[in-house]
Image (cartoon, rainbow, N blue to C red; front, top):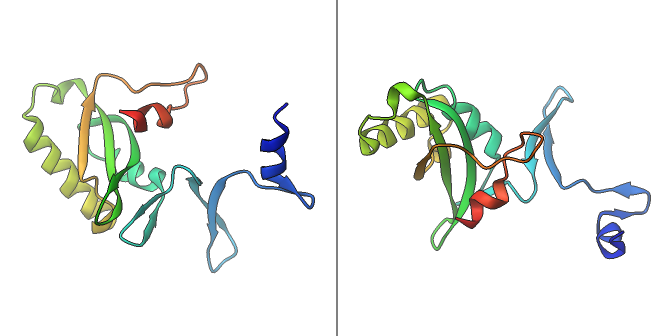
Length: 139
């Protein structure tokens, strides 16, 4: 229906999905995320799913979404929007923020930790249950 969009993603019998991936030395492909979701911070290309996976291993976190936030120095910085486990909802948010940041540095790489953490009751989702990252980015 949108001819201009179709032309921009399909040409020369190639369909460009907008997904980002990389191939390892064994020939396996690893999905990083949508090209519009990949965070570019201080020269690093950071897939939101790998950061989310690290954050989700913290016992306080039930669900999270990672997005990039504009930053004058780094280009973008990582923001995590987090739904807490009910056992942690009354815990001091500043202390919990530092715990989650330090945990992410240990589980992942130091440059992949969320510099901003926002705690929410629920994440915005589509009818099919996918997280609406564009809506989170608008906040």
